[in-house]
Image 1 (tube, one colour):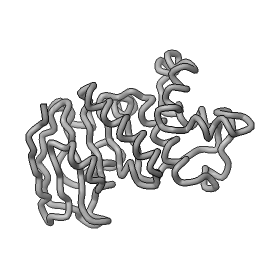
Image 2 (cartoon, rainbow, N blue to C red; image 1 turned 180 degrees about the horizontal axis):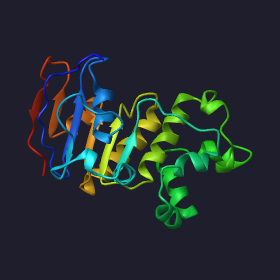
Image 3 (cartoon, rainbow, N blue to C red; image 1 turned 120 degrees about the vertical axis):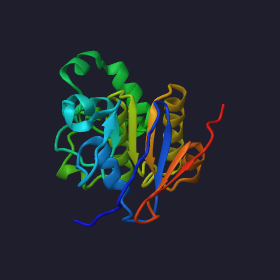
Image 4 (cartoon, rainbow, N blue to C red; image 1 turned 90 degrees about the horizontal axis):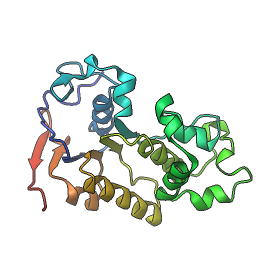
Length: 217
C-alpha cells in the first residue's frame, strides 16, 4: 500500500467546515474513508470526542455520519430502499413518506422519479450502471442526508452534477452550516472552498499543509 502522508494532526471543532483538496490520487478519498471507519490508518488514530474510532460500535457511529462517497454504489432493490438502506430500525419507524419525499425533493430527484412507471418503488437494475451518473449521485446524496447525522463527510459532492444539481447541493450544505453540523468535504469547488475555516491540502507531501481561516460571523 502506498503511504499517502506521514503525519496529519488536525483538531476539527464541532460545527467546523473542513475542505480537503489536492491533486488526483493525493488521498482525498482515502482520508474520507478513514474518517468514516471504512479503512484504518497504518499509524495513528481517528478520534471522535477524544475517543478512538475503534472503541465505538461502528454501525452506531456511521449513523452519526452523513457520508457521500465519490463513487455511489447502488443495490438491485427499489430506489426507496436504496435511499433508506443505512437507517436503523428506530430511524425507519420515524421515516414516513413526508420525510422521504422532502429528501427526494431536496436533492432534485422529484421530476425524475415522477416519470418512472413505479415511482420511488422502481427497482434498480444492474446496480444502477445504466443510470445517468448525475441521478446516481442524487440517490447517493439522498441516502446520505436522510440519516440526519451530526457529521457530514462528502467526497467530491459536486462532481457529475449539472448546474441545477450543484445549486441543490449548495442549499443542502448551507442548511447544514446553519444547523452548525460539522462538515468535512473533499472538493475542488471554489464556492465550497470559500466556506471553509480549515483547509487540508494533501498536495503537500509528506506532511499535508493545514490552513486555518477565520470563521465568518
